[in-house]
Every structure is written in structure tokens, then in C-alpha cells.
Length: 141
Length: 115
Image (cartoon, rainbow over all chains, first blue to last red; front, side, top):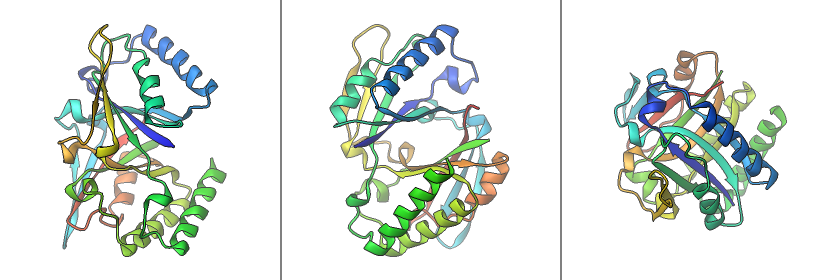
């Protein structure tokens, strides 16, 4: 099973403050462990929401664009991993051990990634197109 | 540059109701176009927050775990792309052409990734 682990933003991350050298070193070590255990598929940090935008869609009108920053700091995404494991519990155990050297992340959310088998309305034809897409994207990586 | 595009949560995404065949088809068609342009690094949908957990950190205390579902529906993430783009503007222009992610409306958030 694959999971998206969402590290929520903090005042530090939204303020554009870089993590301390200690946290970067601890995080590097933690990521190495995740890779060695075959758990880590991807991991990225996000720039502050001041460098972002939102697009709001509504029925029957043109979508509108809203520039960042966005106010709900603690609900914003600061970074993420995509991890794979046998079950959610395994991922929770990993995340409980993530470095919190700067004391900045108060909340981390763990969400299961949907697989084709989750969807009844994905017809065999659409599933095959989806599968082709996935292989095409992997080929470009 | 790389950007993360998030589909924000909604009552629709949190309901667990499945996208219709037509919505799937429109999104796959859009993704095929993005892939043909070499834009997609990854694209994934998330299951509802009822399957999720949150891990809370508080100083040196043992982290606490709470089970979903989570109430702030519109602040949740329902799906993500990581896309290649020349600038924020470039990705905004591209995603303005995205099929409406929800029947009732929907919000995409576009964020730059650390290089």
C-alpha cells in the first residue's frame, strides 16, 4: 500500500525561514533510513504559500485565480513523503520517529493513496489508459 | 521548476462517492495531454480522510495519534500532481484548462517545490 504523508506548514515554513542545519542533517539521516528500508518513494518540501496560487472552479463560470499567501497556516502543506508499507500502522511507526529537531511540525497527516481497484467506475478501457499513462510518466523520469 | 498542484477536499471528495465514468474519462484525457507535454512527475488521488490518521508532535513528548475523518473538509487534500513548469504563471495557465475537479466546483492549490 502507498501513503501520502503530509507535513503541515508552520510559521517558520510559511515565513520562508530555512530549517536549522541540525534538522537538515537529522532529516537526511531519516530519509536514508526510509530509502534503505524500501519505504520511501518520494519526498519534497514546499516553498511558502506566498509563492503559490489557487484556482477556484464554479459551475458555469470561468475559473478564478487567487494569489497566495493563504492564511490558514496550520492547515497548509509544508512538505510530503510518498511511502509504501504493509499497512497504515507501519507508516505511523515510522512517522512517530521523524526528526522534530526545530519543534516546528505540530501535525503530520497520513493518507492512503487510491489504487485502480478502489474505483468501480474505472472501466477496463479507462484502467488500461491510466496504466499506459503511469508507464509513460515512469519512462520519462 | 517543479510545482505541486493539490485538489482541495470537498464534501464530494470526502463523501467517498466515486467519480463518474465521464469525470474519470475527462481527467484521464487531461492527464494524457500533460504527459504528452512531459509535464507529469507524479499524479495520485487520495482516499477519504476517514481512512487517515494524524500524528501530533509536542516538544519531547511521545507523539499522539488521532484517527480520521477530519472536519476541515475544504482544507484537506483530495489529490495531487507534481508538474514541471517554467513559472507559477505557466502552471496556473495550464491548470485553468483542467476539467473542473468536482461537479459542484472545486479548488486547486499550486505550490512551488524547494529546488
